[in-house]
Image (cartoon, rainbow, N blue to C red; front, side, top):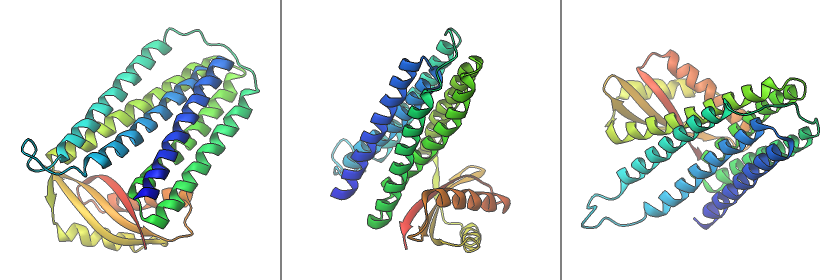
Length: 278
């Protein structure tokens, strides 16, 4: 879809600009926390770039070399991206131990407010367009932008403390480094599961998930995809959402659903949501 691709590219551009703003702000104010946050945003940009590239690649037909298509190549490529994120996190951690930290000027707050507004506006816009054209790719980008904005808010609180005590700059670097490391590990884990797992049609689990989703308003159940990994399940639940649901409300309801599903003790270890329009 042309509109989908156009908005994915727009989101990539916004993430790239936001990352550059964070890095430049860090250089100007000599603050490593916001600079490291810029690297985290660059990781989001890399994921979107990979997602867009793979969506084009998936359209290629099977050939003599790949008679069953290119599915696993995409997962392997994502695993490589995850490994790169882990290596970046390790590099930032080692470098953070050698840096000289200092107190900063309060004027950095104005830059942080501008960055946070850009990220929230981008997340809300992507969600709205995703609803209109039923694009899972845009829903995914909206989630990434929202979580990045939330992380920037947390980062901003740490930076404000850095105005008074330079140690908090080091602490902020470590927190964001852990976020990058976690992102890389999750990417590796999810795509390894998709390669090694087997599709499952357990109706008991599906029915219980459907029953749980009915307890949450503004969310409609569509379908559940189960992947069996020996003694646990990785599930993807397709849900419909109301048009008036904001990105913040959506995230809250997804977390609420996850908690309720985990409480059912269904041997489900990982849950993802794919959103379709009602």
